[in-house]
Length: 288
Image (cartoon, rainbow, N blue to C red; front, side, top):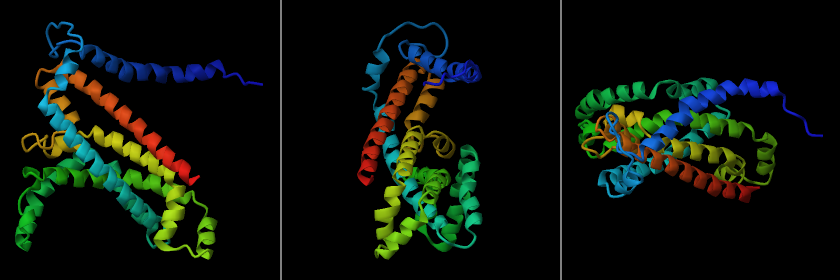
């Protein structure tokens, strides 16, 4: 017999549904509407249909921002997952100060992205060049954020701060593995990296999928670190698509045009996330 859901449960979730619609869905629908106009963020406007969307594909700055965003997302996603999985394996082993080290690795996650970025901006600008000159390391004797390699500075800060959350997810996956599995594998002569490849990784495959999708989604919308560290510079070499939308939408009088850009970014993120999930879930089934 099918259980009926009490009416009181609907009443309990109603305020959250209303808040979600007012604060999230309604602004999104507003953005979609304005993307079909020529509104600058003020004054009168006219309906222009899909003009903003067709113009986007002829805009070299948007293409440049998308290329940089994709490059950054691929590098950051791979680095974060490789490093956080390695750290989680280390923290899951029988080592001293395990709980202390877990707290240390989680510390960056509780700090605000802007705070961390401004601190690292000072480090890159004033501390590293001084020490590099004293130690005779020419490659680090200038502020990296002012060079063509500025994106590496952003990548370092982003990866460092993102490791914490992903490590926790991988750690929870590792702790869900029954120790008897490792004991049986050891009896069969499976040790070292072979154990990781044949036992550990297949059993934490769902956690790998979650982390890859969350990383991909988050880095495609990278904003705080770029704005605080380089503001998209030097020139526009580190300008992500989210930073471009913000700068040209709010300061450049292109509110409707950048609303169209934001709508496209939304569908790009949704599309790539679904592709990742389908691809990685297919890999998970091979391990079942």
